Length: 257
Ligand SMILES: NC(=O)C1=CN([C@@H]2O[C@H](COP(=O)(O)OP(=O)(O)OC[C@H]3O[C@@H](n4cnc5c(N)ncnc54)[C@H](O)[C@@H]3O)[C@@H](O)[C@H]2O)C=CC1
Ligand SMILES: CCCCCC(=O)CC\C=C/C=C/C=C/[C@@H](O)[C@@H](O)CCCC(=O)O
Image (cartoon, rainbow, N blue to C red):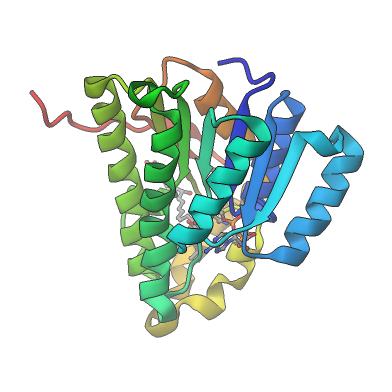
């Protein structure tokens, strides 16, 4: 998929991985709608992107992925401003074992809410143009990460939802590819603050030491993997793992045979 002129929506776009994904989309010619709850970071990123790429290339909207109402308004404004959606990146996420219901609400329910609203616009069966949806899961979506069981559960949910939606899309003719990106540790605020966010599992924080020995990815390495999942039209239902030591596609058993 060539990105020139395509319209992308990125959740949690103001900082960290979402910011790097926004930047790589702009560098490759897309227009980007940035959704985030952090108004200061979003507004200041928008100002800086205006200088680099021109005001008409981006739209920043203060929008919480937990709020169906705010999401509906955000998609309406996206259509009014840019005329549709071709690419969605469900990136917004938190790690907070002490606020586990909020973690489920943002990391998993939020991904499903945003996806279903985007589907109404993107689905070829409803007159949409099709496109691609990339969900930012985690290595914790593929195996047990004992210091954060609820975070782990949400990311397993994201991987499962992505794969089932990919199969549903193929079987139904939505014209939308769905892929999950599963990074290991990445240098962002989420990683920096994780030690204070493990709640009743803080005594297991040392589990990070092993993967941390291998270093942490920088956000632009994650954005490059995102770009691969968006542009490679053969990728659907994939879970791409990336750590400082390797990058590979995970295989899963098909359940329909
Ligand atoms: N940092 C890491 O080591 C890894 C992170 N991830 C995942 O990558 C994604 C991005 O994480 P980071 O960039 O590290 O985090 P971050 O904390 O640096 O940035 C997250 C962004 O999401 C926004 N956000 C949070 N809640 C939101 C909500 N309810 N609605 C809209 N925006 C919201 C924040 O304001 C912030 O701008 C998350 O889904 C995370 O689980 C996956 C693997 C590793
Ligand atoms: C508690 C901090 C969480 C930060 C947010 C994350 O999502 C981090 C990702 C979670 C775990 C990462 C583990 C990485 C492990 C790799 O270095 C490697 O050891 C795994 C090898 C697996 C394989 O070979 O298949």
